[in-house]
Image (cartoon, rainbow, N blue to C red; front, side, top):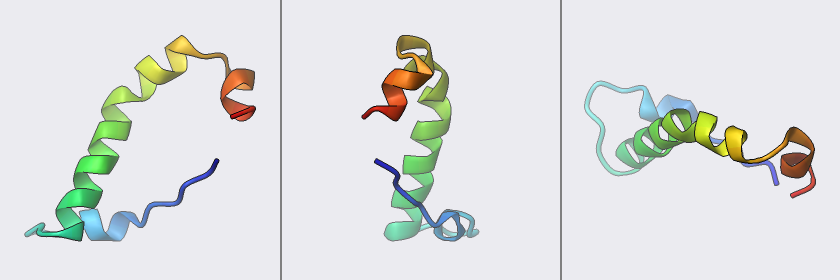
Amino acid sequence: MVIGIDGNEANVDKRVGISEYSFELLRHFYENQKSILRQRSGQEIKNQ
């Protein structure tokens, strides 16, 4: 599955609503990308 996220909403000075949600979602993905990739092989991730 491929999910696209519009990062423009997260890149504003005062985040509220969807801007805050987008920022937190992107921050979570960034902070956890290494732990996710460490646990699974690249081929295993592609197959999902």
